[in-house]
Length: 53
Image (cartoon, rainbow, N blue to C red; front, side, top):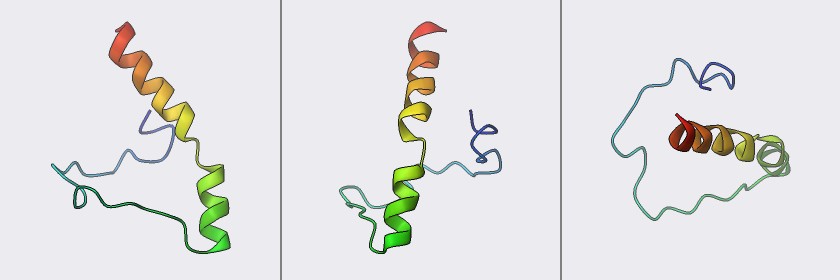
């Protein structure tokens, strides 16, 4: 999954940001990027791995 979405070189961390931080796109480019991000597909694949393997 990481390789498929271009995150194979990401480093793991315990907490990547402060808990409770809310992220919102600020510019039109960020809004479009957020709309184009395959969040549901990634979550679905992770859920499949967690429940079916």
